[in-house]
Image (cartoon, rainbow, N blue to C red; front, side, top):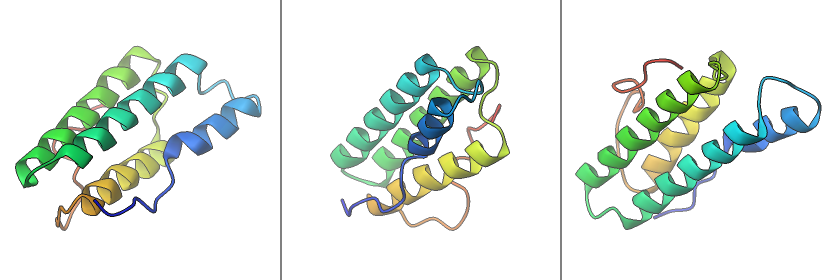
Length: 109
């Protein structure tokens, strides 16, 4: 897997939280990082494109669940950063797809 050059969106989310934003909580930031850690781990272990797509589905549905259970904290800017990170990580793992890889499973963000 090539290195992921796009910074994790949670870096920016944490900065906002540390600066007093009530949009994020310690809990949703920790869960977000855990979802992204698991996603990257699955991409690193992926043996084929099907494994990559399965990892994408799992991280997107994980963020759907997290977002709905934490007052819908993922809005336009967060969605764009998160979708870009998921896409770039999948590309680093070897997926070549022209489009938004999150769109099929994304429901609430």
